Length: 162
Image (tube, rainbow, N blue to C red; front, side, top):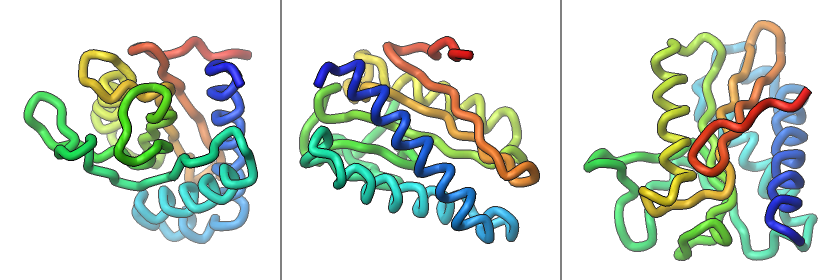
């Protein structure tokens, strides 16, 4: 499977998992649960869905994963832990680091969302050595029970398709 096809398939699967969480686990959102609880449910659904596809053999979903090979994951001396990643543990580069996701509720301050978008750009760029193939900024709207996702690739935000 071509890299671009795999990315599109992974994005579609991720969207399905977010929709499932919004439907099946709305209690978490309604009761203002921590974003970690929401991330876990999405990660749970995502890992199960990926196991159904031979295109993602050997890939796992980790939450708050703080390792880069044998080192602590960091940017410019600051430790970082993305909310959710799809990868092969112990490997590096776009063939092994498929997806990195940051998750926020719509009520989070703008500066937190902006900070996470900046982090995503670093996670997907070659400069910092992680080289995730795709990054996503997921915003959960707790009032409207909806989602929006901004995708990042090659160090910058992708244009949204209508």
